[in-house]
Image (spheres, rainbow, N blue to C red):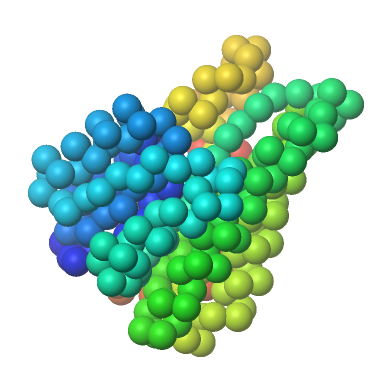
Length: 248
């Protein structure tokens, strides 16, 4: 029970990595607020966490909108009178060559994958700083480190998440609010379903491990960062469960 009674918000928690983190946090005693745009899948994720025994509430929210980006934190502050752990996991992924990326595509990617991280974190910080304890865990991507053909907009947004993580960590770590990122490699989740099969086959062949990861293999990294003493010394770090795709 490493997260007993910790008040945790997880965005994009209806499927994939977010759902896996939610289930693991539930098993470790957390009180949860889960957000997602997909109401039916979100209900299933909430039900799973409740079956495990956790207090859990779902909030349908579009993090691409300002109100949606902060909805989970707002609900946690009201429902649980505070917040301890924020996992900024929600994101989107589309594929196009740079010359074919429209301004609308670029701005949507930045709003969902980068701006939402800033907005939700900014809303959570006052409560975390006041209690002198908090954990912010931002889900980035290894492509934010190495780049990816036909994914300029996605890689740029995730690089922004990593830069935001490091900069904020410098600001707030002395107040015991620890900010870190996880940069997974390719993971078998609904997020990558939209990528073409040739890209996925080529990527799998590049990986030293020889395969994509699974969501349940990423969730324990978030648990470590959220827990004590496991996460106590991680400040502005970017951890890479990435099948060997990036070796810093």
